[in-house]
Length: 136
Length: 122
Image 1 (cartoon, helix red, strand yellow):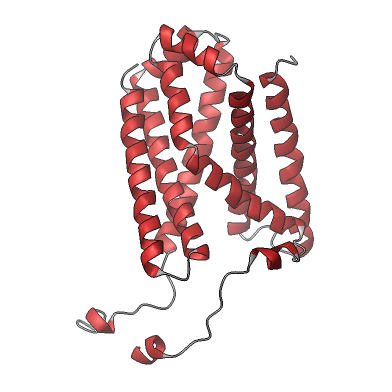
Image 2 (cartoon, chains in turn cyan, red):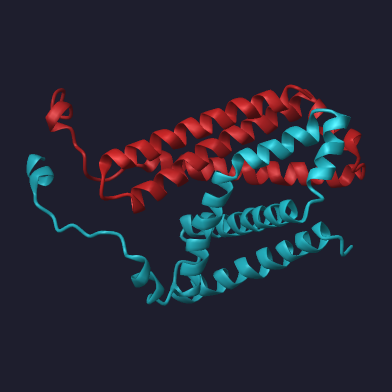
């Protein structure tokens, strides 16, 4: 086993940002990187989400404060971003679970299911946005 | 067999490393997906969108426990995902990666404490 540990291996670094920009991702790759981006966004905004839950639940007074706070356009925008992140992560995650069961692993169905992820997550996110900004 | 997998002879490469975390990430994902459905159905079917309707959901003990279990699943799930991000991109310095990983754990444990406080205050 020690040979396996001591063996010198060629080191490959992470792609630089300029390299990434020249790399044409297939649609499944876009779903994949957005899965990571949306997950990271929700991770960093966890305190914001807990803050909203706290204000909405604690009392009727804090609930009124919550309503006032969420009527701000920028707060609405953040909530919309989080809603999109949740919807995308949810849909791409279900796609992941099916692929774990060895379903839809080939190139063509990978592309088809990527289209399906966007076809579900984006209209639902748009619906949340319309509701947030008072269209209906 | 007794002594050949400890200390400097510990097997650090090969299959099954990370299998537990991989599986935990899937199981916690299913827990969160089920909770999402339960939350949406109970909130929307109640058709009471005032404070009473919302807080009423969380007043029941089983719903508090379901919420807390889901949030713990979320924190475990997020730990695995964010750890993977550090492992993929912070490759130059082991110390820096460790610092990010420790910060991630502290962040999530802090959030778990806050979540418990929120849920059991209603």
